[in-house]
Length: 79
Image 1 (tube, rainbow, N blue to C red):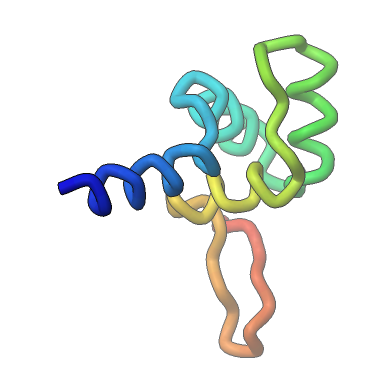
Image 2: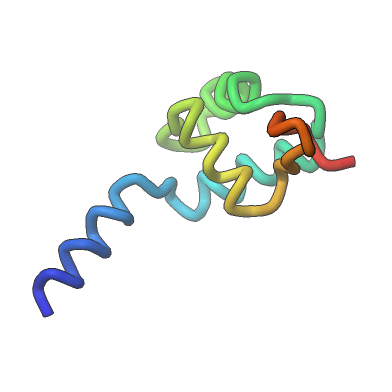
């Protein structure tokens, strides 16, 4: 139905392109100490394509299991 397609489209708008998300994950695996802001800076410097926002980078890390929540509610990079 139309409602389902519109809902799916709304979700897709806020997702990063697959190649950009792959670049975020690759950079994070190479430099686990870098946070979303630094990863975004490096993506912009490399010119890999459209640069996601800092929160977009964070969401990509969460989707790909590259952020781990601590018991205190804080988040850290996996070791």
